Image (cartoon, rainbow, N blue to C red; front, top):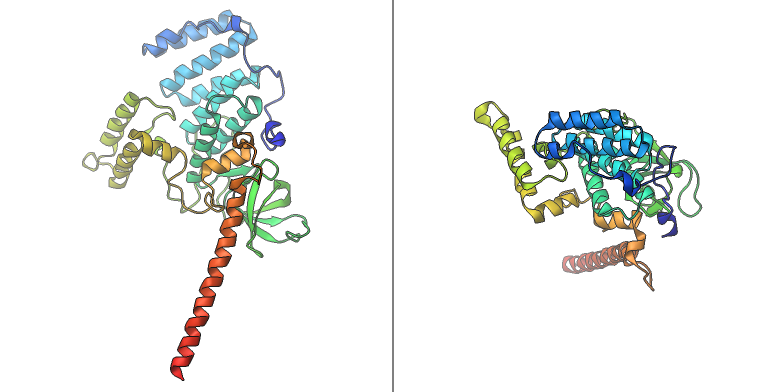
Length: 369
């Protein structure tokens, strides 16, 4: 818990001021907000520009950049919105609202790995940010659908790794393993050793990724709008990206996006039948609150990696980032015990099957006699 609260394993913000929130006197409304909400994008952008020209106060400029980015995001000018958020963070690298805004824009553009890094940076800066655990779960689920889900810097779910140094009683230097998911704040990466098939939590400095023949990692550029590449054969689409809606869309935005996507991809209009079906599935899931909630928490993900330890994705995220949410357990954490109990039960079941087979073989031998 102490390590998690100290931000162990989380990315650091860029060097600069450590101020996280603006003083109250600088948070009055910007001139372009009302115009933006009324749908007058050009007028709103002109007002935002006028205010940026008129002020040299650093906090006020950062606030205007963030609010202008929100206007641009509302009108789906995502590349320009990201540039404004980067401008705000260049002034105050720990500005929590700018970090949150950047993470959402990156989710909107299917750059889930970069979005996750932004949410993790926000977690280091402000652990009390509203619903931050939910957003981190969503970013992890989105990254896993893309086939490149990070569990640490340059380490992804499904990576084959070689152990860089010996850990007595666990592995020898040169042993190989596969990354299966999130670990804990003390050991943020969970691996399954190829030799012993044992699952353990460890630090990323023990691991040397073996990526021969695998696709390149996600786009690490700072301003590109290109979606991250998926691992070949992952076959999982992002419903939000399919419909072109924001990660926090309104019901009206969803309705309009569905109508547009349906017309665009309708087979009678020259579209693809497969894509038209994907649009229908995406709308069905996102229009139903319960299905959407389950989707956001990774319920559609294959039962490997995420379920490797018998934990849901939300439970893995809570264990990794928010151990303080799980309270104190006199006889140990039940989530940690679950894996041990499942392994023990698997051993018992295997012994039972073996005993039954021996009995069957014995009966068969007697019958032959």
